[in-house]
Image (cartoon, rainbow, N blue to C red):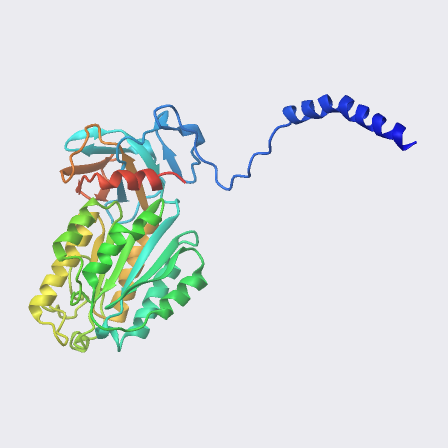
Length: 381
């Protein structure tokens, strides 16, 4: 009986083999599940516009080119009374580089999510005001939109990332409270780290809020000039909040409103000498004058703003104004019609079609070959 079964089994196997091979050759292999949709690229390494998700950001033209650097310009628009103007459209803006009008290839509305790098000075001079600094920083985060992300960094003689960019307010609050007073002030090194490394990890609209008493004491990698140069190449505005940790605040009455772009308070209180918030151990008035010039340079070259808060109330008011401006800021991007040379300075002019509106934007930038890789990596999500 077994002798009969064996030949039958062999014959049946041979008979069914072609059907098995046919079924295997016709089967479609399961595609791996994609966690992120990538835009379809054309033959010239461009990205088809139809594949790009808007999300408050729009792209002009048939393709987004990757062969030149996208220049991004944060823009605030106000009416004659100083009120921010929302709901403007792409076609209401004009953008010129060196006097030549540019095609706006990228446009983000005021509703687009924003990412803020909050850089907190925790050097030794902050020892008796750290609790106030924590409160002011957390109040600032609370004023941002729920969809806005925050990265928290601190610096003294160390530079530490307390948390990566996140919308989780509890994580951000714990990160701020983790900051502790240290030794020296590596201000230049911290700014260098942000401009060279941290901003490249954050896509979309972004800004830096620098909270410091101003005087660098222990940087060993970067300098005043090198970081200002990096700032000119960056596409993120820097908002500097200069606070006084000298203990001299009481002579000014401990209150008042900070002057955007200048030191001191108003509303009837006396104004201290510009650029001299007092003195601390190891610092002198000349150091503070240099510090204020430096913070102005960072803000002015990037299209941000400098604030001086000589009291907790003044600091809180400065943060309120920064949060308000970030929440009402547009972002324009263009590909220069003429290729740039590394290190070349180019003038920027942004206009709107309505003559009674005021536009605030950076007026120049430094073209950098290094920016090409940055925009290619972070332009589209």
